[in-house]
Image (cartoon, rainbow, N blue to C red):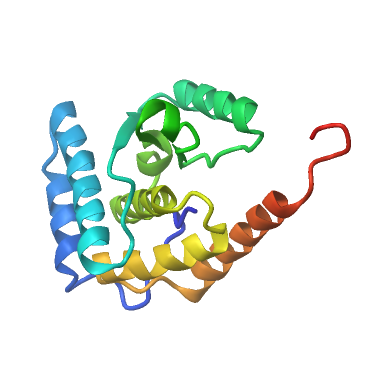
Length: 191
């Protein structure tokens, strides 16, 4: 789910966490600082889920920040070949190998989050992706529509913002299509 054409009701002023992230982002001058910024937000999102909701992400989750579009596309292709499902262009989680690997892996396409959009949209989109994938890790079988609804509430509480109804409706519509596709029986001969 992406809210890159982010529309916030009431703006973002007076939202301490979001303002702090925007200020921190403006001060980044080194690549290592950018990585630390992205990892810091991930830790904050994970801690928020644990403290403020009944959602407990899988305890062993590895975050893989992918800066190359080509590398991210290859990871998507590999995932689709293994599981028959095309993952998002923004982020996805591999929790289907949990029993083999002992952990989940969240892949984040850094370019799709931070390329050609405002700092505000980039940070909100990143939080949306983090929360969505962490919620997936808590229950990989949860329907996408339920995950999207949980993400809305969580992001709004975490950042102190209100997403527009238009943004929410678009995301729910996409999630419904994903759920319908998952519920569809495989074509004959592919069982």
